[in-house]
Length: 245
Ligand code: SAH
Image (cartoon, rainbow, N blue to C red):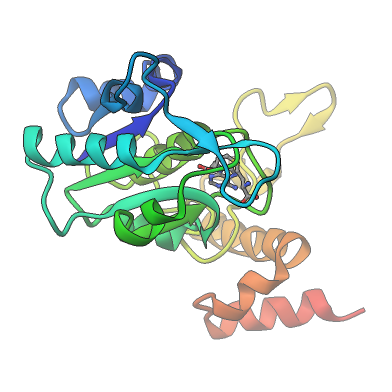
């Protein structure tokens, strides 16, 4: 899977993707992250990329032309397909969830446009972007961190990126629930013991404990997730017990 990022700050992408899972996936050719500097597509002696907002008000708006030109260069030089998603990172977009990450991971390539200042000229959203994504109800100073969050969450879902050592199948949200608590050695740390069941070697009992803890964690922290989760009769009975005063 190939990601093309359009940004005014390309070097921001160097270190986050030079470590661990993502770095290995890049080395193995499972994913490719190409960062393009929007400023290289700006004209004039100052290569200006922003301007005052029509209608007045403080703050600058990113001009449409350098962004369109950068995207057109990606289309022609990197054969970016006409029907591949062009994602504008924006607090006004649809919220990124595990489902949205799964949906994006079905594609072979994505273009990600990072805004700065007050945001980008509306014509970028209307006539260039095919999708608009927000990573949450808060405002960042730029789309770069948001693009990194999208790239990281989508890359994890590309087959082979996360090895069996790290497995995504039990991850929070993948199952529709939050994950059960995890423990590692030592079995007793500063007097706090790991639940006995996890040391029992009884795989069926451990699976049951994990399922119940997953239900409990979700019930306590994010009860609304239970409404759309795939629950068995045993799950429902366990939740009934939790609800009982
Ligand atoms: N004035 C805008 C915010 C601009 S923030 C507004 O009120 O809607 C500058 C840039 O940061 C945006 O263009 C966008 O690319 C990025 N950004 C800020 N918050 C974001 C979020 N929650 N999700 C994704 N991108 C975000």
